[in-house]
Length: 330
Image 1 (cartoon, rainbow, N blue to C red):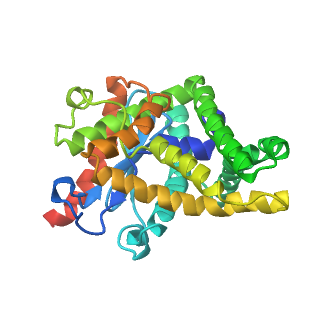
Image 2 (cartoon, rainbow, N blue to C red; image 1 turned 90 degrees about the vertical axis):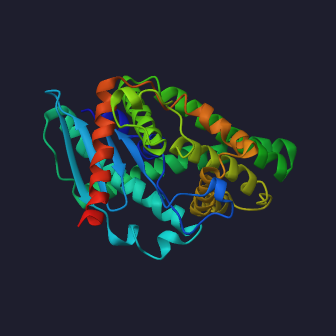
């Protein structure tokens, strides 16, 4: 039952609750002052829990009904650690997004069972596939096809492809913000957003080399540059720019809709590279200003966590840190 409020819009919620997104450096940056570290840890908020992704493992910590913290971890597939494609620009963003959706959906389902009954469940591939297909279809329909449909009136009234495409982009941005506002009204989603804030605080403390204690972690803010919410905003803005140049006159609606769907991976790949750029150059005032709207938007997808939530996020983060330290100690 804890999962029901999340199932209908699982994919956009997973992306918004993920973050900071994992970033693996493919080499040193050109400017040493803003050098991109070798690896940026990332994670995702769950139901009464937090998932963290390290170099070699992914860990999940969940608060059980009796108040304990249950932590489990599993090894990442080798292709997500050392594969050639995971370091290839534009392709790596799509692969990491795929990883986020697969791992996130599975972990969210497991966390719901633990939070409700205190027991884990095994998620079958069929159940996972059906859930993903249904939720991806919903997300694409809501954020890409629906704005196309609603902008048809502007196309007929203006007889201008440019006006119609700009209207489509404006509707897409409005639907996105309205979606954030509406799901934030749900009590269960608000708790996930509080764990989202706890995840951000723990990662920020790690990156600032502060102690991973609830008191130290709580001093950091709930916003983070690499957040999935910022990533989605970049996707929305890029789609507005890209779709503006696609002609509409004389093109069947089905082909227009397919063009939007087909370009989603392209937009996602570019958005990830921009997120990497922002992480590398966030010390630059101009870059920081460009990413500020994404930080503002995170006020809708994060909440201030309590210390119990911070303990959960810290437990998950420590699990992947311990796993990554083991090879060096061997």
